[in-house]
Image 1 (cartoon, rainbow, N blue to C red):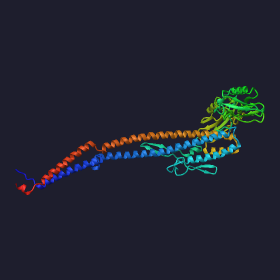
Image 2 (image 1 turned 60 degrees about the horizontal axis):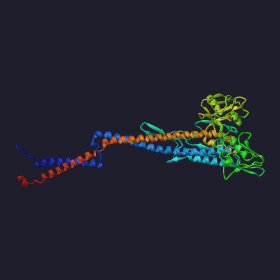
Image 3 (image 1 turned 30 degrees about the horizontal axis):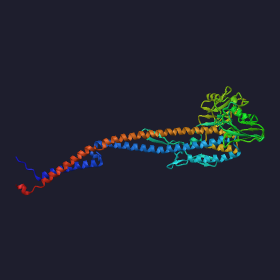
Image 4 (image 1 turned 90 degrees about the vertical axis):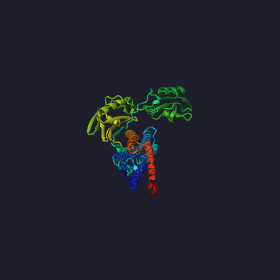
Length: 513
């Protein structure tokens, strides 16, 4: 039985086949053009959820990377500011040491008042540093300058809040340092006012003079009242005794070098007036404290004592002369009274060991030739004499310990300079030491944050690479496969076009035959 296939049916089959071939060709062209396997939800409905999840994870990871970048700006800015604060404190230390020494004069102290005031303004500029319009040391009050000067007082206008930055799915990091840390939130301190420098003796090494900074070997000139000038090469001397022997030999015994009565300086005797000077612009006489002129037959130099060390014997300290053995001092700290018996101490190190063992949470420190007490919290404390030996007063530790204050310390230093009070200038050094220690700790903490940010960024970039790789497996097209499929689709479509064109070339005459 023959079956008649109508032209209309044949036409619908060919057109449908042609459209399917065209659809496959367009799909492959779209994949080749976008290099995406999934260009719409209809391409692979089962993969859509996975793709959306990976896109969300990548977006979150990008935000964490942005947070790390912004946090790095804050942390790096804080590091620069703290370095600048450290430099200012170093300048303040130079001023305090200079103006509490024997070479200080009322004129130099008056000039130093101006220097300290300028350094206070410089500190204000540093601590009011802002990044992208946000102040670094204001806590969460980032739009408010943290420090403002009101007359002779510096006020803190920020808060103590910590700003946390999310640097990963399950991690946050503190990125700021509230400025109230500079106002006495870490420790309390009481600075000693008594110089613990040991007396000089003939065995003292010249390299230990001037608080351990040493001397400048060379040649000095010495003139006496007879008009005779001697040029003495003392560069070979190692101890004070060597120096004395060299000068005595070079001058034929007419000029002698010894040690002053209080053991703080060198002393030259001879027919006055005596003049000690430099040769060819040298600095030898100055480093020995002898670059001066006397009115009579004795020239006493400036203080060139060595640095006090834990090994220094108490008996060698001039300021403790007549006060040994020491006795008892009382410390009221955190609501408890402590009695500290120092009578067994022989060296400065013994004092530290006995005190540190007797008072929990407090430490006796030896810095810049003075003793100081530092509490481990910002609570105030009181130190008094415990018996008739007046030990606390003798050591310069009688009084109230107060929280460490950056700007308060500087204002106290200005007042001490204005009053020419060297003991007060020296007592402020312990508070300065505590502030410097605080800055060093903050620098280390901030440096740790910088390393943590580096680590977080590396982890986030690895995670980003992994997420994008997984997304690519679901989302991206296989280039080789797309090229092959595209070629097949083009061939199929062209074949469909050819078959369809031949169908419609038939006419009535061909059909009747």
